Image 1 (cartoon, rainbow, N blue to C red):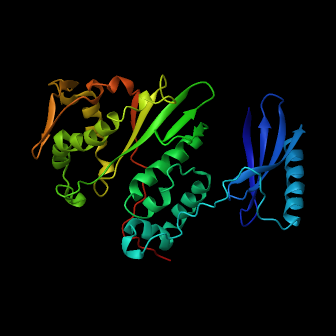
Image 2 (spheres, helix red, strand yellow):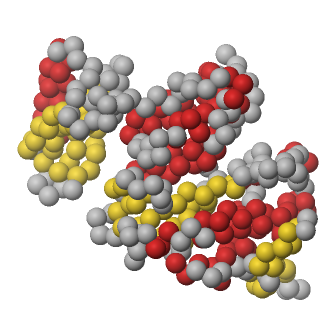
Length: 330
C-alpha cells in the first residue's frame, strides 16, 4: 500500500515520525508514533494527501512539535495489556542467572544488542507467561531464538498471531497462513562430547562431526517436535507447518553445523572430485543411518513417518549473540 521514504525521531526516541508514499494515490502521508501504556510504538496521528514529500515532512514536524509540547511520554490506546515487558529486570538471584544473560545485561559491549532486544520485547506476546524468567536462566538460547524469529518475521512484513501456546507463531501475508515452531539444538544433559575446542577444529574433524554426530544432534529435537503432531490442532490443520531450527549445543557450533542438517533432512550427502581433465564431478550418496557413541538413528527426516505434515525446515546461523568475554578499547 505504501513505501517508507523518511524516518525521524526525537533525541530520546520517545516520539517517532515517518513519511510514506501512498502507492495507490501517488501522494505522501506523515505518521506520528508514540509509546502506549505497554511501551509499544503506536500510531498517534495520520497526516494525508500531500502531493509533495516536503509538504508531508513539514506537516509531520509541526504535529510532532505539537505532541511534544503536551509533555506526555505515554499515549494510552485502550487495548494495552497493562504490563511493560522489561526483559532485563532481574527476576532471579544472581547465582541462578544465565552467564550469557548477565553479560548482555551488564556489559557495555552488548549495549546495542540489549537495546534491540528490549525494544522487541515490548511488542512480543508472552503466551506462556514464563518467557522472561527462562530468558534469564536456563532457556536463554531458546528464548533468544524465538525473539530473533519474531523480529525476522516482522521485518518480512508478515502479520504474526501469538494467541496460541503452540506452535510458536501463526503468520500470514494476507493470502496464506503458516505455522512456525521454534526448535533448538541444546547441549547434552551429561555435557559429554560437546566440549569442542573450536580453535583446534580442523576441516577433517568438522567433516567427521558432520557425518554422524551432528545429524543425531539435529535429529533429536526435530523428532521430538514431530511427535507433538501440531498438524492435528484446529488452528494448524490444513496449513503449512514449518520447523525453524538453530544450533546452540556448543560454542560457535552453528558456524559449521548446517551441512549436517541438510544431509540428515534428505538422507543424502554429496562427494566431489575432479576428473583428469579438471571437470568437477559431484556424486550424491544415500545415507541409511547415523551412529555415534551408541546412538543410532535413521537418516532422512523427511522420510520419517508423519514428516509429510512438515512443509519445511529452516535454519539460521545468525540468531544469536556472541557472549564470550568482550574486550573494549577506547
